[in-house]
Picture (cartoon, helix red, strand yellow):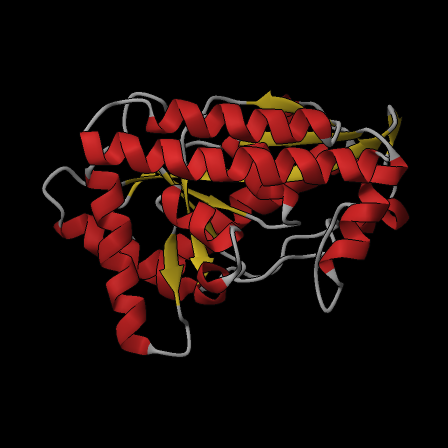
Length: 262
């Protein structure tokens, strides 16, 4: 029954989100971001995902958040904190309803198999940032099992850095970590994190069904120190630095160490 309730809410709220955001864009009215945040918060509430924020996200300007990636739930959790756009693989744009919702959320779609299209995506990311919309880039290029951070791919991070060095206002990049740490109020061990993690060849519907049945989940979103993409470091060096920051934050969060240990 709970699964049916979640499905009913999703299929009711999502078309409404798409319509309202489309209307606001057409009329040139504010409120796009606030509508998205409320939508994600409602979905997190019905899925019983409890969110804790550690550190300070940049709020006074648009920023590129560079993060690890664990699950489809990351989208809901991060989106519930502040207005945000995502960088996503191009296939998502063709999914029924979900693809249309992603487009209404100003998602940047990337086809990594086509070099020219990747260049176009970089331009869109810079355009979003210049227009005041913060963007999340999942730099691993795929999702993990929730117990580790995979190596970051330097192509997109580096291209954004180089574009930022040429941009008039510059681009600020902030490392961000998302972790799932508890299940029904009990600390989640390594063997339980795949309850939330969606990776490999896992089918979506059985995965979300299991997540709904298992109960409340605790998520922690942590922010590191922002850095300017000003061309002072080369592409690979900046990518490694951001990866190291996210890896340290993730390790500290999963092991329960306090922030001062970062």
